[in-house]
Image (cartoon, rainbow, N blue to C red):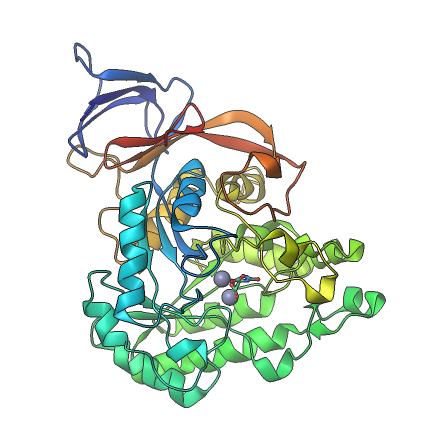
Length: 428
Ligand SMILES: NC(=O)N[C@@H](CC(=O)O)C(=O)O
Ligand SMILES: [Zn+2]
Ligand SMILES: [Zn+2]
């Protein structure tokens, strides 16, 4: 196994340092010389703990034409990630120990990021009966996060049972907050733009009503709740209230909800169709402030690859979702760092340390100190780059940022001391 010496990397808030990586660990930091290691010149680069994504759709098993565990893992590594949590809405659904173990093994065999499967809450995501949560928790995949993402666990009794069940092993239910009765036929955010375009709206209250209900349920049973892809100002207010009350709730926001608004629907390009929908400028401002002050705990990509025929069609028939692994860091730099709302230490917190803690991934999200696992990424903060969908490592092309110039780029990523990305290119 090659030993790597990273020379002169800046760390958030710290002085430039060298990092010696050997046998999967950071074995030494500070000023290091006289080593026979392979040297990586990191002058001008920032070293961050590897990013952790709590919300990735890898599409395997079932839709390998849109993404596989391997292609999604490669896209993640290029985005600076060393761990991703794979959502359960595959085909078959990840609702048994067998399926989550299969995904976990595929991730291990690809070896580009740690793939932590998320288990479904209900059988087949149908919202009727609880899936075998205990068996998934005890499986080789050691599932801790359960989610019916793509669907809301809308039956309050079932949601209560799920929260009670996972409390026993400190698991967490990640809720896709969408009251289905309020979003029937919905195509975009309900507001001025949807009225102008004549499209059926997805009102903010469909998200907020479920979040309000579920924080109260989590309080009642004393369990951990996580809210997926928070998208409205009202949701931020409810979370702020719940946290002040001591309720064990965490929440995520996607990069696209930090940057884009419902005006994008005006061109009827389905690349901008996503669940929850792009909202208004006021919502974007509230999400940024909520992320800055910690009301929203983490950024998660909700990387949702879709095959060409599922996206390049009429808006109403297009699947919702956007890819995001390769652009997440840059979009957060553009929306949170360049606006002065957060610094690099804040980004590390929201994209590495806290998501790792929520997922229980103890090998990730650690400070880059001697003895820590060598899971890290090197970022060039001086580079600006233009997003080219065709250059993506993801099998799908549905990025909403085509042609956009974004700041900061991942130069190298290491998983347990082994490079997955070097000079901005995937190693394997
Ligand atoms: N975000 C999306 O628009 N789509 C996701 C499902 C989801 O995250 O709800 C997908 O699986 O494609
Ligand atoms: Zn969702
Ligand atoms: Zn999702």
